[in-house]
Length: 253
Image (cartoon, rainbow, N blue to C red; front, top):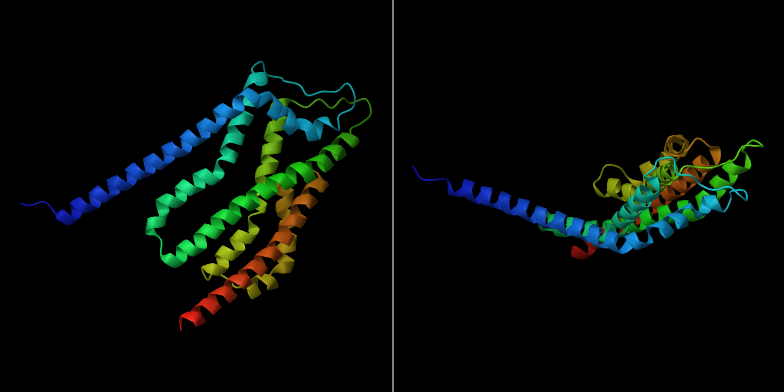
């Protein structure tokens, strides 16, 4: 009985894909590790920079505290690791793209590359918006309403968890234009349908802002308004996509 050559080829192809996936993942991990090694000597300074929006609003004589014994070492290390992952996002996405690209059609490749670049830039923009705009307002508000006689002394671990949650919330929220373009590109909806749902979206973004941000009105509003504006940008971008697609089709004919 002879072996099935087709089955052997499929098994060989599957193994080769697994090997390539392993190599890509190892390169991603190696890139993160390299950046982490470069950041570790500056871990304490990086944490001080991250805490600046809060420290600048603390009263004179106040400071942050470390409840756990190992926190002064572990938390800056954790920040350096998260920052290494954050910095290497373009490098990681490149390897993801290189792995899936051979299985995509030409028109899919033309769409995926701009979406990867724009989604990365929008995520970075969301994080920057949170740090430079939202944090000073939120921390100033929170410390300003503290009852008299109460010293605000936040634990460094809880502060890191708090700001990382906000970074993720704003970074993901800023992906709305990419999501809108994808939905239109695959034919799930149309720009006109998106525009007609605007009133529901406005209500939804404020509800989402309530769940994704800390329980204060200011941070909820600061997330909801950019989400609504980004939704409008997504409608505009999806209309431009359809116009470009129509023009390309007419040129081909």
